[in-house]
Image (tube, rainbow, N blue to C red; front, side, top):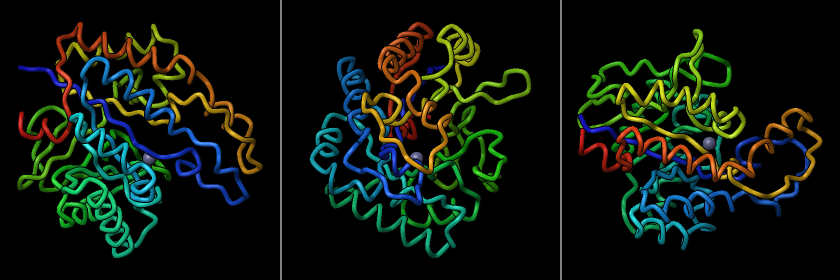
Amino acid sequence: MKKYAVISMDVEDWYQSYHFDCEIDKSVTVLDGLDKALEVMDARHIPGSFFVLGALADRLGEKLRVMDRAGHDIACHGWEHIRPLSLEPDEFRGQLLEAKAALEKALSHGVSGYRGPYFAMDDRRLDIVRGCGFHYDSSKLKQQKSDKYGEMALAGFEEVSPCVYGRDGFTEFEVSTQKIGGMNMLLGGGYLRMLPWPFMAWMLGRYLKTGKPYVLYIHPLDLSTATLPRVADMSPSKYLRMHIGRRHMARRLEKTIALLERYGYEFTTFERLREKL
Ligand SMILES: [Zn+2]
Protein backbone atom coordinates (compact mmCIF):
# COMPACT_ATOMS: atom_id res chain seq x y z
CA MET A 1 0.00 0.00 0.00
CA LYS A 2 1.28 3.46 -0.89
CA LYS A 3 1.70 5.87 1.99
CA TYR A 4 0.49 9.44 1.62
CA ALA A 5 1.10 12.60 3.62
CA VAL A 6 -0.74 15.93 3.33
CA ILE A 7 0.74 19.06 4.83
CA SER A 8 -2.21 21.32 5.59
CA MET A 9 -2.28 24.88 6.86
CA ASP A 10 -5.18 26.94 8.16
CA VAL A 11 -4.39 30.38 6.77
CA GLU A 12 -5.53 32.97 9.31
CA ASP A 13 -3.97 35.88 11.17
CA TRP A 14 -3.39 35.79 14.93
CA TYR A 15 -6.36 38.06 15.72
CA GLN A 16 -8.60 35.83 13.60
CA SER A 17 -7.55 32.65 15.43
CA TYR A 18 -8.51 34.26 18.73
CA HIS A 19 -11.24 36.84 19.08
CA PHE A 20 -10.65 39.80 21.34
CA ASP A 21 -13.21 42.16 22.80
CA CYS A 22 -10.64 44.88 23.38
CA GLU A 23 -8.81 47.14 20.90
CA ILE A 24 -5.89 45.35 19.22
CA ASP A 25 -3.10 46.38 16.88
CA LYS A 26 -3.92 44.67 13.58
CA SER A 27 -0.86 46.15 11.87
CA VAL A 28 1.10 43.18 13.29
CA THR A 29 0.59 40.11 11.11
CA VAL A 30 1.78 36.51 11.34
CA LEU A 31 1.18 35.77 7.66
CA ASP A 32 4.97 35.75 7.13
CA GLY A 33 4.56 32.21 8.56
CA LEU A 34 2.75 31.24 5.36
CA ASP A 35 5.77 32.38 3.30
CA LYS A 36 8.09 30.45 5.60
CA ALA A 37 6.11 27.22 5.14
CA LEU A 38 6.00 27.75 1.36
CA GLU A 39 9.78 28.33 1.34
CA VAL A 40 10.38 24.95 3.03
CA MET A 41 7.81 23.11 0.87
CA ASP A 42 8.57 24.70 -2.51
CA ALA A 43 12.32 24.05 -2.10
CA ARG A 44 11.43 20.34 -1.94
CA HIS A 45 8.60 20.47 -4.52
CA ILE A 46 6.10 19.42 -1.85
CA PRO A 47 2.50 20.47 -2.52
CA GLY A 48 0.07 21.18 0.32
CA SER A 49 -3.54 22.02 1.10
CA PHE A 50 -4.18 25.54 2.42
CA PHE A 51 -7.50 26.39 4.09
CA VAL A 52 -7.86 30.13 3.62
CA LEU A 53 -10.38 32.48 5.26
CA GLY A 54 -12.69 34.20 2.79
CA ALA A 55 -11.92 37.50 4.53
CA LEU A 56 -8.28 37.14 3.39
CA ALA A 57 -9.07 36.32 -0.25
CA ASP A 58 -8.59 39.89 -1.51
CA ARG A 59 -5.52 40.64 0.58
CA LEU A 60 -3.78 37.39 -0.41
CA GLY A 61 -5.17 37.25 -3.96
CA GLU A 62 -1.92 37.35 -5.92
CA LYS A 63 -0.14 35.00 -3.50
CA LEU A 64 -3.01 32.49 -3.73
CA ARG A 65 -2.82 32.55 -7.53
CA VAL A 66 0.95 31.91 -7.40
CA MET A 67 0.42 29.04 -4.93
CA ASP A 68 -2.35 27.62 -7.10
CA ARG A 69 -0.12 27.69 -10.18
CA ALA A 70 2.68 26.01 -8.18
CA GLY A 71 0.36 23.02 -7.52
CA HIS A 72 -0.90 23.80 -4.01
CA ASP A 73 -4.55 23.16 -3.21
CA ILE A 74 -6.36 26.31 -2.07
CA ALA A 75 -9.37 25.44 0.08
CA CYS A 76 -11.83 27.28 2.31
CA HIS A 77 -11.74 27.92 6.09
CA GLY A 78 -14.99 29.90 6.37
CA TRP A 79 -15.33 33.67 6.30
CA GLU A 80 -13.78 35.10 9.50
CA HIS A 81 -13.03 32.17 11.77
CA ILE A 82 -16.31 31.96 13.64
CA ARG A 83 -17.02 28.55 15.23
CA PRO A 84 -19.48 26.84 12.86
CA LEU A 85 -21.37 25.43 15.86
CA SER A 86 -22.06 28.91 17.15
CA LEU A 87 -23.69 29.89 13.84
CA GLU A 88 -27.28 28.96 12.99
CA PRO A 89 -27.31 26.57 10.00
CA ASP A 90 -28.58 29.29 7.64
CA GLU A 91 -25.94 31.75 8.84
CA PHE A 92 -23.29 29.07 8.45
CA ARG A 93 -24.42 28.35 4.90
CA GLY A 94 -24.44 32.07 4.03
CA GLN A 95 -20.91 32.69 5.33
CA LEU A 96 -19.62 29.50 3.73
CA LEU A 97 -20.96 30.48 0.30
CA GLU A 98 -19.58 34.00 0.68
CA ALA A 99 -16.10 32.66 1.55
CA LYS A 100 -16.18 30.10 -1.27
CA ALA A 101 -17.19 32.78 -3.79
CA ALA A 102 -14.43 35.17 -2.62
CA LEU A 103 -11.75 32.47 -2.99
CA GLU A 104 -13.12 31.33 -6.36
CA LYS A 105 -13.09 34.91 -7.60
CA ALA A 106 -9.45 35.24 -6.54
CA LEU A 107 -8.50 31.97 -8.26
CA SER A 108 -10.89 32.11 -11.23
CA HIS A 109 -11.85 28.49 -10.63
CA GLY A 110 -13.73 26.31 -8.15
CA VAL A 111 -12.62 25.55 -4.60
CA SER A 112 -13.00 21.94 -3.58
CA GLY A 113 -12.25 21.64 0.15
CA TYR A 114 -13.30 22.99 3.54
CA ARG A 115 -12.10 22.83 7.15
CA GLY A 116 -14.21 24.25 9.96
CA PRO A 117 -12.54 26.73 12.33
CA TYR A 118 -11.72 25.04 15.69
CA PHE A 119 -12.98 21.74 14.14
CA ALA A 120 -16.31 22.91 15.62
CA MET A 121 -18.53 20.91 13.28
CA ASP A 122 -21.37 18.42 13.46
CA ASP A 123 -23.09 16.19 10.87
CA ARG A 124 -25.75 18.81 10.14
CA ARG A 125 -23.16 21.42 9.20
CA LEU A 126 -21.15 18.84 7.26
CA ASP A 127 -24.31 18.20 5.20
CA ILE A 128 -24.40 21.93 4.46
CA VAL A 129 -20.74 21.79 3.32
CA ARG A 130 -21.65 18.93 0.96
CA GLY A 131 -24.68 20.84 -0.28
CA CYS A 132 -22.58 23.94 -1.07
CA GLY A 133 -20.61 22.12 -3.76
CA PHE A 134 -17.46 21.16 -1.85
CA HIS A 135 -15.88 17.79 -2.62
CA TYR A 136 -14.02 17.23 0.63
CA ASP A 137 -13.78 18.31 4.26
CA SER A 138 -11.02 17.97 6.84
CA SER A 139 -12.71 18.95 10.11
CA LYS A 140 -12.60 15.52 11.74
CA LEU A 141 -10.40 15.24 14.79
CA LYS A 142 -10.55 12.29 17.20
CA GLN A 143 -11.94 12.90 20.65
CA GLN A 144 -12.86 16.46 20.12
CA LYS A 145 -15.51 16.36 22.84
CA SER A 146 -15.15 19.67 24.61
CA ASP A 147 -16.95 22.99 24.67
CA LYS A 148 -14.49 24.26 22.10
CA TYR A 149 -14.72 21.42 19.60
CA GLY A 150 -17.70 19.66 18.07
CA GLU A 151 -18.25 16.10 17.06
CA MET A 152 -19.04 14.61 13.71
CA ALA A 153 -20.47 11.08 13.80
CA LEU A 154 -20.12 10.89 9.99
CA ALA A 155 -23.45 9.09 9.63
CA GLY A 156 -23.76 7.53 6.16
CA PHE A 157 -19.98 7.65 5.52
CA GLU A 158 -17.82 4.58 4.94
CA GLU A 159 -14.15 4.29 5.81
CA VAL A 160 -12.36 4.11 2.44
CA SER A 161 -8.89 3.99 4.00
CA PRO A 162 -7.74 4.41 7.63
CA CYS A 163 -8.84 7.92 8.75
CA VAL A 164 -10.43 8.69 5.34
CA TYR A 165 -14.22 8.45 4.89
CA GLY A 166 -16.41 8.67 1.80
CA ARG A 167 -20.06 9.30 1.01
CA ASP A 168 -21.51 9.78 -2.49
CA GLY A 169 -18.28 11.12 -3.97
CA PHE A 170 -17.56 13.41 -0.99
CA THR A 171 -14.47 12.70 1.16
CA GLU A 172 -13.71 13.40 4.82
CA PHE A 173 -10.03 13.49 5.89
CA GLU A 174 -9.27 13.09 9.58
CA VAL A 175 -6.44 15.18 11.06
CA SER A 176 -3.78 12.81 12.46
CA THR A 177 -3.57 12.05 16.16
CA GLN A 178 -1.74 9.35 18.11
CA LYS A 179 -3.11 7.75 21.26
CA ILE A 180 -0.62 8.05 24.11
CA GLY A 181 -1.68 6.94 27.61
CA GLY A 182 -5.37 7.21 26.74
CA MET A 183 -5.02 10.69 25.25
CA ASN A 184 -5.26 11.53 21.56
CA MET A 185 -2.24 13.71 20.89
CA LEU A 186 -2.37 15.95 17.84
CA LEU A 187 0.55 15.10 15.54
CA GLY A 188 1.03 18.71 14.45
CA GLY A 189 -0.13 22.21 15.26
CA GLY A 190 1.18 23.75 18.45
CA TYR A 191 2.38 20.33 19.64
CA LEU A 192 4.94 20.13 16.83
CA ARG A 193 6.18 23.58 17.82
CA MET A 194 6.15 23.24 21.62
CA LEU A 195 6.93 19.62 22.53
CA PRO A 196 10.55 18.40 22.64
CA TRP A 197 11.49 17.02 19.22
CA PRO A 198 12.57 13.53 20.45
CA PHE A 199 9.11 13.01 22.00
CA MET A 200 7.34 14.36 18.90
CA ALA A 201 9.51 12.16 16.63
CA TRP A 202 8.69 9.12 18.78
CA MET A 203 4.95 9.81 18.55
CA LEU A 204 5.18 10.42 14.81
CA GLY A 205 7.16 7.21 14.37
CA ARG A 206 4.45 5.19 16.14
CA TYR A 207 1.87 6.59 13.74
CA LEU A 208 3.91 6.42 10.55
CA LYS A 209 4.89 2.77 10.99
CA THR A 210 1.19 1.90 10.51
CA GLY A 211 1.31 3.39 6.99
CA LYS A 212 -1.96 5.30 7.54
CA PRO A 213 -2.42 8.55 5.58
CA TYR A 214 -0.80 11.33 7.61
CA VAL A 215 -2.38 14.79 7.85
CA LEU A 216 -0.20 17.53 9.32
CA TYR A 217 -2.01 20.61 10.61
CA ILE A 218 -0.20 23.94 11.11
CA HIS A 219 -0.86 27.69 11.12
CA PRO A 220 1.06 30.75 9.88
CA LEU A 221 1.48 31.71 13.55
CA ASP A 222 3.54 28.55 14.18
CA LEU A 223 6.23 29.74 11.74
CA SER A 224 5.97 33.52 12.08
CA THR A 225 8.81 35.59 13.49
CA ALA A 226 6.49 38.50 14.42
CA THR A 227 6.31 39.65 18.04
CA LEU A 228 2.66 39.97 18.92
CA PRO A 229 1.42 43.08 20.71
CA ARG A 230 0.34 42.68 24.33
CA VAL A 231 -3.41 42.24 24.43
CA ALA A 232 -5.38 43.16 27.57
CA ASP A 233 -7.76 40.25 26.96
CA MET A 234 -5.02 37.64 26.75
CA SER A 235 -3.57 35.80 29.75
CA PRO A 236 0.24 35.84 30.09
CA SER A 237 0.34 32.04 29.71
CA LYS A 238 -1.60 32.20 26.44
CA TYR A 239 0.67 34.99 25.19
CA LEU A 240 3.67 32.79 26.00
CA ARG A 241 2.10 29.75 24.28
CA MET A 242 1.64 31.81 21.14
CA HIS A 243 5.39 32.54 21.03
CA ILE A 244 7.08 29.32 22.23
CA GLY A 245 9.10 27.46 19.61
CA ARG A 246 8.22 29.60 16.61
CA ARG A 247 11.83 30.30 15.75
CA HIS A 248 12.67 26.62 15.35
CA MET A 249 9.39 25.64 13.66
CA ALA A 250 10.73 25.82 10.07
CA ARG A 251 13.45 23.37 11.15
CA ARG A 252 10.76 21.18 12.80
CA LEU A 253 8.83 21.15 9.55
CA GLU A 254 11.99 20.09 7.69
CA LYS A 255 12.64 17.33 10.23
CA THR A 256 9.04 16.11 9.95
CA ILE A 257 9.36 16.01 6.15
CA ALA A 258 12.64 14.08 6.44
CA LEU A 259 11.01 11.59 8.85
CA LEU A 260 8.06 11.09 6.47
CA GLU A 261 10.47 10.46 3.61
CA ARG A 262 12.34 7.90 5.73
CA TYR A 263 9.06 6.06 6.30
CA GLY A 264 8.41 6.04 2.54
CA TYR A 265 5.60 8.62 2.49
CA GLU A 266 4.64 10.50 -0.68
CA PHE A 267 3.44 14.09 -0.33
CA THR A 268 0.21 15.15 -1.96
CA THR A 269 -2.82 17.44 -1.51
CA PHE A 270 -6.28 16.44 -0.30
CA GLU A 271 -7.68 17.28 -3.72
CA ARG A 272 -5.32 14.79 -5.40
CA LEU A 273 -5.53 12.22 -2.61
CA ARG A 274 -9.30 11.95 -3.18
CA GLU A 275 -8.55 10.46 -6.57
CA LYS A 276 -5.77 8.15 -5.39
CA LEU A 277 -7.71 6.31 -2.64
ZN1 LIG B 1 -8.45 28.06 11.98
